[in-house]
Length: 170
Image (cartoon, rainbow, N blue to C red):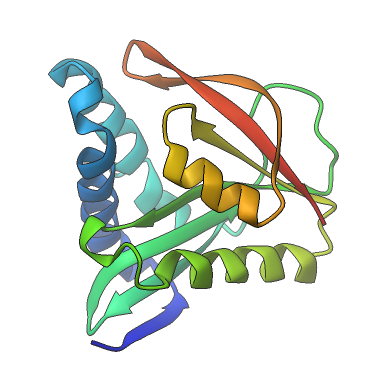
């Protein structure tokens, strides 16, 4: 099936939230208590999470579609990690691809868009966090030139995950 790409619109909110929820649970669902997972899913992908960011000009979301179905996305926006970040830095908040689509080129195509868009916006660096045991993602980001710059406690409900902050100098 041919994959197409386009910017997300507010109308994509419900389907995008469901896809993101499914992808997160596929990848990390077994790591958390049900209550922590439910709290995170609601915070991250509920009405006040991802769907609301589709109307916020500080964020941009690019979709990967198989036919009309959302099978991947990337979201960039302001750096929200604690610390002193350059004013012209940007964060890759999420890059999700459904499991059945891994290895089909969606991740690299979305990542190419992220890097190109950050450069178009004249950003100095691209920042992200990645779960320490997500070796596949870490290798993916390292291939793009990201370097580890620190640690971050990523909260899923009441559980703190050990994430690594990574930076790509643009």
